[in-house]
Length: 305
Ligand SMILES: Nc1ncnc2c1ncn2[C@@H]1O[C@H](COP(=O)(O)OP(=O)(O)OP(=O)(O)O)[C@@H](O)[C@H]1O
Image (cartoon, rainbow, N blue to C red; front, side, top):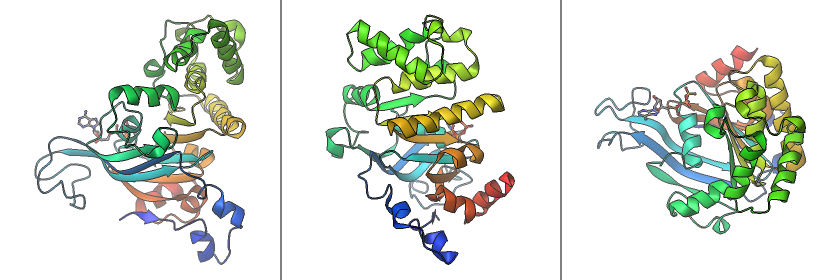
């Protein structure tokens, strides 16, 4: 059963206080940038038993037919300027969810509406591949955990950024170079290194080039998948600071996936907790942290203390 922190005032009311109206109304009043309903991704055909969304599974595996239900009945919204955090242990389905949203994977069922595409009327999982490429190139940005997935390691940093701009329709070389330099500066990569290939960069720098590339088409929505995993703590802190700064300055909405609740606590306005393919708890990050409902979330929160 999904543990919902009902509105921003749920935990506050339980604690005998009301949050100011500005806090409760901050994102909810805005038309969502992204809305996903009942998304599912399974590996295997499924059977009469496990196609029932409420059928108990062995973790995420059907006990009758062995189908893996990587993501099960997930719904979410992201509002303008908001950071939505998705946290869960390895195998909980968070990367699969992100890959479905970015069209790297075809979901089994569900629908996705994007306000910047067709005014949010079309189910983006059902539009043509060409239209999905348009959404990827012009409306979304993606930063992968593994920079090898997001960058061409042998192209220069500047060419990597230009690649995304070209995909989004830019043709004017001078403008692309200026934009690339502006972005490199923004993510704190010295412009004198613009001609170097990312393979010569440290892990933190590679992630920052990926962020610059993802931002190059000025997307309203950025996906970040475990962007700080594997980085040294001090490098991690710099990347996290950069993400917050970009949200502050550009107002870009983000979906951030991490197994690390510390990262999610720092970045996310709202948090969804996933376990075995399902969302088991969601709400304002402060509420989830202060008053976790599900035993798994409680374990995660207490491990931070
Ligand atoms: N191609 C596949 N075939 C079968 N099962 C798969 C496939 N890809 C992923 N899975 C399963 O789907 C489930 C969710 O995997 P996913 O990678 O989304 O989890 P995750 O929470 O992102 O974990 P991690 O951070 O380790 O990647 C896991 O049980 C995984 O084994």
